[in-house]
Image 1 (cartoon, rainbow, N blue to C red):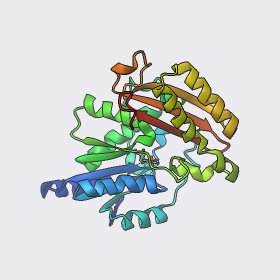
Image 2 (cartoon, protein in one colour):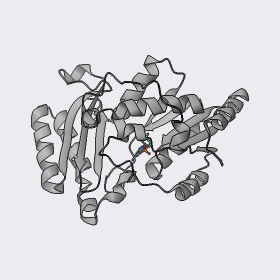
Image 3 (tube, rainbow, N blue to C red):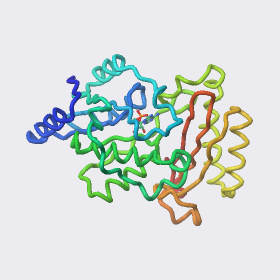
Length: 287
Ligand code: AMP
């Protein structure tokens, strides 16, 4: 595995790989790799000849009072994991390398961001779209792998790819969970033992909510039930609980007419804000 720190070298490498007709699979991450990332990387390995993983904690997508400084980092461990998984290139730029000159543009996401994390983290998805656009131009992948744990991010990036006619195929990868159902996340290390023990109630709430939907229960009733269930069992502060169409993230009027439905939740524990969701189709009831 080769580690690359500069944009110029990464572009050169990708151009060379493309020149010899190799397909490039790309997994963008913020590091502190876990099995969720591992699954994305294995998927990329299966479908491409070359796999590039980036590790970059993007300041542009963190708000002023968010956890940019406290975000967990361990590059030595990440390198070992990436190598073990058979990654070909690890792109690991500094903040100065990614944003070295005064920026003159910023991508503004106009739809799919007035709800969920877009609503509680203003500007977050502008930062995500901007860095992903840059990374796509640096790595030049054929396929890019994103986890459905961040389902709103997937919806936003599918919009970005369509709007700018990017020649990248986005591959959605299902959420990877701990045995007790908690979605794997780099931020889980910030849960206390007590919080870790109750965190799986988030997923349980989503599953029960989905069942209620499929049984025809009204959306406001389900949302209220989930809020109570989570607050009672976790004592976490609920940031949001929403049931919307997916990927457009609009209010659901008629259940039969939408492609997908998302039930999404965000809850604040003492040192970590956790998100989780279920995306399924009303007809099939499947994720
Ligand atoms: P992050 O490093 O948290 O920015 O995540 C990098 C990529 O890994 C994103 O596409 C995430 O959606 C994905 N990811 C993170 N956690 C999981 C998980 N538990 N299951 C599937 N994908 C995940």
